[in-house]
Amino acid sequence: MRKEPKKRTERVAVVGVGILGASVGWNLTRLGAEVVFIDAARPGEGVTNWSFSWVNASNKTVRKSYFDLNVASMAAYQELARAVGPDSWWYPGGHLRWADDPAAEAKLLKTAELLVGWDYRVEVCTGAEVRRRLEPALAVPDDVPVVFCPDEAWVHGRHLVSRLVGLAVEAGAEHRFGTAVRDIGTGADGAVRDVVLSDGSRLDVDVVVNAAGPSASHVAGLVVRQLPMRWEPGAVARIACAQVPVHLPMHAPRIEIRPDGDGSVVLHSREIDALIDTGSEPAELGRLLHESARRVVPELGDSRITQTRVCNRPIPVDGFPSVGAVPSVPGYYEAVTHSGITLAPAVGRLLAAEILGGERDEMLADFGPERFGS
Ligand SMILES: Cc1cc2nc3c(=O)[nH]c(=O)nc-3n(C[C@H](O)[C@H](O)[C@H](O)COP(=O)(O)OP(=O)(O)OC[C@H]3O[C@@H](n4cnc5c(N)ncnc54)[C@H](O)[C@@H]3O)c2cc1C
Image (cartoon, rainbow, N blue to C red; front, side, top):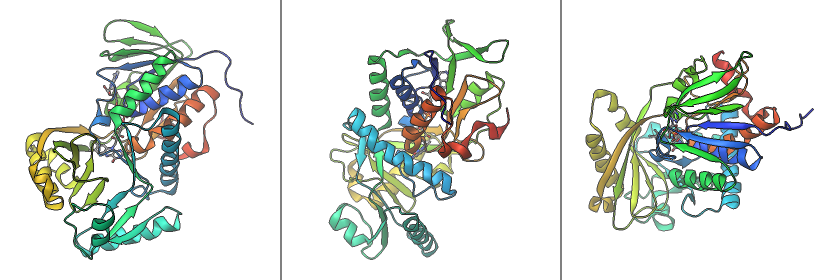
């Protein structure tokens, strides 16, 4: 039986205002909670601003329940775009992927078949068709099979954070930016009671949501909880070009490319990420990304790198999200996940409902924080 939402208004501290914190906080505000957004730096400027930002489920076939959560979040993005308006952050239109060696190509086509079996929209085109219909500037061979997923998208994470936080603040949410959460106080019953900020202030709260991205383990430690996370850093470069020569996000061999709004393109590569721990400087990683991108989109030869940043991915150690209550610390919740760009709308909606309604959605069943112990 469904529990009635609690009568008393909850005061919730959302710790970390990247895409996860912004989505949880916006949803909580809509449901009537008093929200305080707290960020050690500026909202939306953590990993969320240094992500490839591809909204997809096609890369999430490792476990069906994880795939389903990502599909649900893709649908939640459509609703979010209707609710808050799509301009400046929502870029639907699909995603392209192809390979240049037989083994990788066979794997790609096998995954495409699996996806079709799971009712996911996939088209397999040729390079020549892609150039004619979608991306004239690509140096993709004519006959190579290209997997096109038309329901995928990319999101401008920083702009979306700003939209969600702005709307929540208009509706009464508070914010403390430029101050870190230094401590989380609990009462004699072990329940969350307050948070202490780095400026020395203390806020009385009923609930804390740990949405601190790569720093989530540290914040979990403030309630004496261990949240084991991976070290899996990624390098992203932004390049400026007079005219952006691509329209869609794409995984080409050894390089990922997507538009990034006005006069800008974002580049990422798993192969180049592998150089981070060998001590390569971000500037060198950016140069290598740019070189690879020019081979796929020759028009990028005229562009220049504006910034390269290395960030750690916020990935719990088993690779799956940690979302929900930690029963041993009443009032403490986690919203920590890789693929957070894709998952933010679903996680925000489901977690806000769990916090205020006391009931966990079946879709989150495999992703509870309690699997790491208490
Ligand atoms: C190279 C790369 C590529 C990626 N590509 C994709 C992709 O294509 N698709 C996809 O879905 N996902 C992708 N991701 C993952 C995605 O970017 C992240 O899962 C998502 O941005 C995480 O958002 P977040 O809100 O949890 O973290 P963040 O955006 O980092 O926000 C956390 C915030 O917490 C604040 N904070 C930390 N500690 C404290 C504290 N003690 N007190 C107060 N505030 C604090 C920080 O200042 C920060 O603003 C990628 C990640 C990387 C690194």
